[in-house]
Length: 310
Image (cartoon, rainbow, N blue to C red):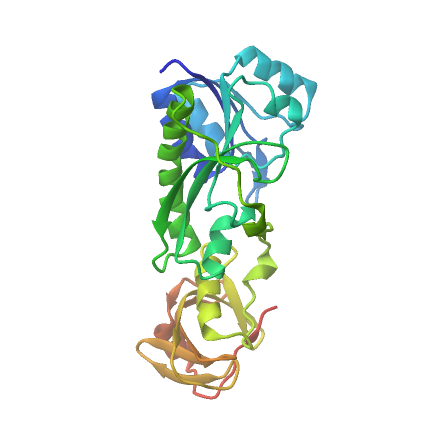
């Protein structure tokens, strides 16, 4: 198909979509966020989308101002039939939304209107949703409020946020190609979102990983999954911050934050309701390890206490 496509995206989540678009259509240009300093040396590092664009031999721009006249002129020169956006990280002005004749299509990692906003994968796990998916929408000036073009569902089966991210980014790549094909042959009919059913999620911060032992074990187990791989769920043991990578709820009761049992399966800790079984943890400067190994190394005993990291 001879559609001319401009792609706008930045992180790993967007890369499979870029590759799929490049295979199916003519990608005339890519827009991504500027290189950012990272690591101890603060060396400038390109986004995953920029690195992939270079490999594919595509024209790529990294404007510091997504509302600049220079960007508008560049997009006009690339003459897209449609602009596809996947985790670009910037709000698009109306002049960009109105530029391509087929409009701008956004890939969002939730079943809209549920979990509009910046952290839909985490939000779905925290909420205890049993299903999630991706949606493509015809972009308007609101935050994830445009008409739905296509949606694809999958089950949430104990996934961490990282695992669900990887499943959704592959699902999303196919959904975007299917969407553009349907728009081109007029087989896709945009559907307005039900505004009354909308929920919102904000960007994640490091503090969101703090474990509050007064909360129930079922929620805390979801928190551990939702914060893996970043910022990771965390609690304190004495003066040290302990990362919790894997955990699950258990029947039983105990004092909030207090170790109620230790065995080869892990460390059972009291919560506001039920027990949380810590299965994999990490101390500062140490590798990830099973909670049982951690307990042996620290000679932990029943009755010792983890405190909240909030």
